[in-house]
Length: 603
Ligand code: AMP
Image (cartoon, rainbow, N blue to C red; front, side, top):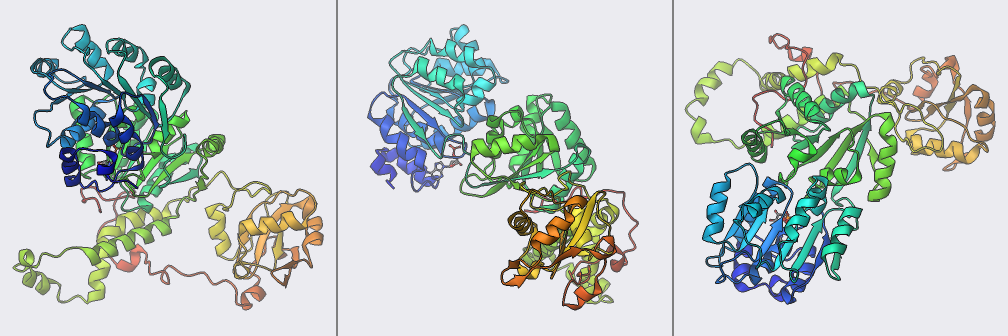
């Protein structure tokens, strides 16, 4: 890896970026910077957000500016006002030690007069959204005749937003012997058209593979019935107490609806969409940036340009129509060296889209299981314990108050105090989840040859309660097999065994894996065939025995229990107690789960 100095970056710029903490160039910078410093050249860079592309074009462009010449020499076009401000801010930082260099952001939604005044005073670099720049060109207040560098940042987004004609119009005003740089996360056909039209044998740079999502992003999808989408969203939010993420919705209306519901249910959320005024959007974005909001519900368009590096999650509340949008959404997490998760809450009909995304992104999507109420409460509880352990106690500030607090609580044992603290935070969550119905996943069958690795949670839990006397699904026989978790059997291996030993295709229904044995269901007509083909085969040196489960559903099989089998852990064993154990005198709150309103976000 080369240093910035070896790439040819001038000392005054290096000083500024070193102060910003840039020690070594990022890959896109290593490729682009020396190439552009050399001479007038065109570059197409396929780079995701967060790869360091602003400095990749910004540093060489700044270095090439003739400050003495009082005319715009570089033009940077980008899709949104937020990105425009961000790029202009970065360039101002990089050029901290270049005297008199002026960068002007030009964007819609703010006073055009002050932008005209700045242009009259003279600027060297214009960072603009296309619409406002056209306006200024039409008013003849901007002269692009001296432009030597044109950068199209997030070019795919600009085209998605319908700026193709504006870009054509703008490019007609700049000299033809200029360098042109095009940055895009994806490479749709329309971009190829632009590159052919305006670029001369451009150098093509790909950071990461074409169309590949950022590698630090884990992709997970949860399949639910459409009616359960919101409930699933709440559970996911509850399961990650430290979540800091964007929930993407398809329409402004849906965005507002989901945000309203979340706020009403006590979550630390807000909405961002085009029906809000610019001032409202700025306010929400600022609150989100400083983490006063934990969950931002947004449309794709409104969230563009919102630059936050530390998102833990991106949640797709339904999948977008095109891969580009998914790439953009998921690229908002896992940035600046951090890892992140892109979650999609989908219904059965969207399964095909998931497969398509997997192919295009060349990434496997994990199928998640909606967490149970108990798992959520446990997770939240331990998060609280963790916060209690880590909280910074300012002894001086509270020392005056402590004696009277101690006096008031002296009749309580330490254990009682702990219970009460827990109850204060948890009664509402526990109340909600105690009676909440588990969310059924529509992917509730195991079909041989398909990769559904998880049983329905409801079934899993039922299975974990030793399948007490359950009958098979209609048309299916429930079979007992004498291997279980102890033999490293899971649903996938069990399906594999059936695949291996039964010559013909067999659909497999419900599977319950126990400690030392398991149950699985097959169509009645195939039961004998399966029993015959599998019995007496061996798995890891153990002879397999398959038979029809007794009592039509496996039953308790106390004999199996005696073989050292299953013993479900009680809530108590798990360190999790029900609300009643806390004996709180607080009246029960309404039926709302989630984080408590007014509480500071937990990170
Ligand atoms: P960008 O893709 O330009 O939005 O950059 C993503 C993030 O990486 C921003 O927070 C930059 O400040 C940061 N960054 C860019 N280049 C470097 C570098 N060479 N070293 C460390 N951080 C960088």
